[in-house]
Image (tube, rainbow, N blue to C red):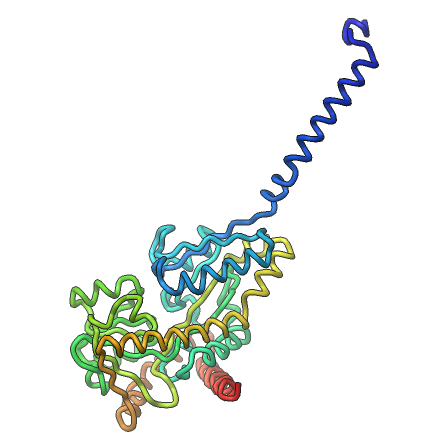
Length: 364
């Protein structure tokens, strides 16, 4: 019966099994590196609203992704998609990363009103210094000490800001608070918008990509921005008048975030998490602030080269703006107070930290 089942005999059968096993092992050994590489590589989708040809994508986010790929020896690959290429609107980016539609986003905290109430302290008037690096260092420390509970299922990779912003206008500069009455002003957050509403302006919370059309259509008269965005959006011809504040504190800043889905971050192997950690946090936030200072000067020079007009607010006019902002600041403290948040404490902490890093920056 055995010979009917295996007519070749035991010796020949054993030889064939050895050959088959060897061939199978050879195939497995050939495929193993490919299987191992495929199993180890992790693709992360990074989504943001700036144009894909913008300096932010080409000079900041893409090189950052490449550094992480290099540091992880190819195990982490970050695909950067700008211009909302993966769908949705700029105001939905936080929702996209929370629901894990994407893995990482760059956005403004102010695009999701009320989502980061403690970070709003830095969006209030007269908190930011003129330099983004100093304010960004203060902002990240503030985030770690006071605002971590606002993050929920987000793992924050960077929290930073731009230098103190200016007012771009189509027809004439906005020198005193009374000049804002009746104007329609684009604002980056509800918080700074309250200050302009309190002096009679109509405000619109408009994401960056929509601003050019709003100026072209005459829907807005003015917009709050840093200089750095002017070349990207080609705003010098649409809004040739800038109001800049010359006091020791800037009019406002906007809080920027690079946020990662927390579950995705925690699911990474320890070595990959270490790579992410080494390229995020306080160091990345300070570096991004420094870069924003540099590109601010590029924007300032581009505006001047285009023949733009800059008017500096100082002295009594500056103090008039400070006084006019007080009701909006009080309203914010009352609003967050209803949620059990001590607004006075947060404002004091923000000012103290900005002063700390501004002094440090002057000596380094």
